[in-house]
Image 1 (cartoon, rainbow, N blue to C red):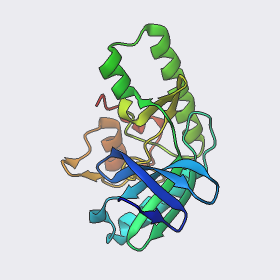
Image 2 (image 1 turned 90 degrees about the horizontal axis):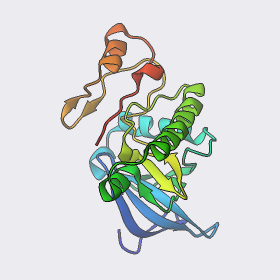
Image 3 (image 1 turned 60 degrees about the vertical axis):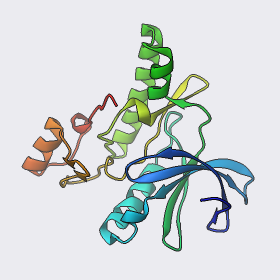
Length: 196
């Protein structure tokens, strides 16, 4: 994105992530003089009104969460055809990178991380938010504190579930599909853990 400023406020510094739905950039909030993360929706999704509505609603839902293990969402906006979400910047690594670089975690570290992830998920459940794509790539570690991170608009669910389509087809998750088939609301058993 080069010398880009989104919304006359967020100066893009560098790309720090690349997912199926969005790119993530480290940026500077010019107004508040702080570093933030900006998730920018991929161009192929910007003309899909239904998807854009879902993207914004779910960003607002996550912004309603307040928990030390969940990244704060500060802003949602658009600049021309660029749709973005501004989040707390976490200076650290994701759990997938840590496991790749350091190997198997000792049992105490693994249990501590698991406990904190469970607390974050519990806070989301209390607001009716189910993530469904829990994976090490979505867990950021900063000062030994995991943060449940990935705001993936194909992963968060509120209310009655509909089919979730990915580039590779329908999500493969028994509990999730049971909910779809039965037309019931997602609940804590609808989460998907993905080891990737």
